[in-house]
Length: 163
Image 1 (cartoon, helix red, strand yellow):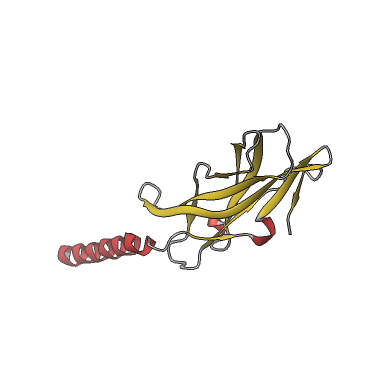
Image 2 (tube, rainbow, N blue to C red):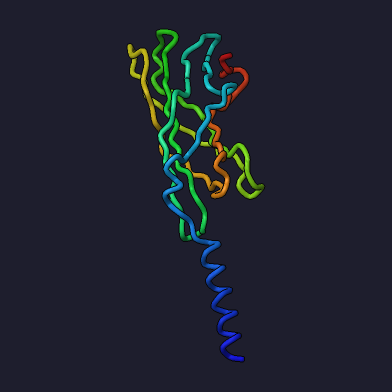
């Protein structure tokens, strides 16, 4: 009787251990990031003048398995190009962007907003900027777990999307 109970408990523990095991090699193609076309670029304006064009031009990223919370995490840093549109004395460009999971189980859906700033010295025409990384939990079993990246329009009277 004790042997049967021990075998059942052992079989249960082995099956539980296998179901929570994760192969880190499957993270090679992670993260799968898409730049949201409708939020790819904005123009900042002030006093009726177009000052800066801000564009998402790419990203850097990787994934890792966080054993502490038993979830796969995607780390994403969008890359931006900021172009001066008019010769002004404004040097500091402030903008916000988002990183969100596009699809997946409800507990993974969400949008995180980040704020950043770039210094574009007087006389400079453009600068490239990669802000601090953002991090999202993503589903392990979903090979198509896309992450969307885009720019936020901060105020209707100062920023507008570029189509």
